[in-house]
Image 1: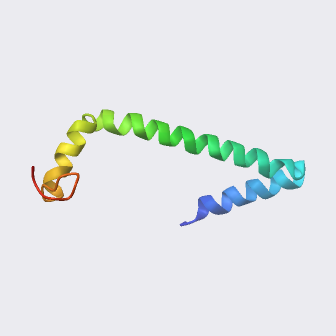
Image 2: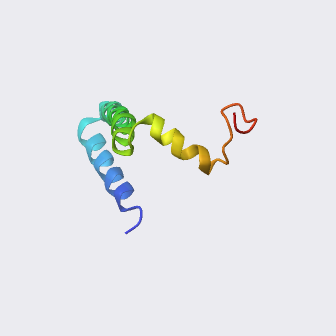
Length: 76
């Protein structure tokens, strides 16, 4: 069921807002922002660790980018 998680999240938000009033959306926004920060932090740490570090990632990406340097002038 595509989008099912969005419907479930909306129903939880609606029920919590109905139960707790207007403080609920503020608390849910705080929880959501915290989860986003944790996700980004884990991605910045875990993905490079699994792929061999940032150096290895950029070395592997360089040939895929046609060997272009950071300044865009080609190799070297």
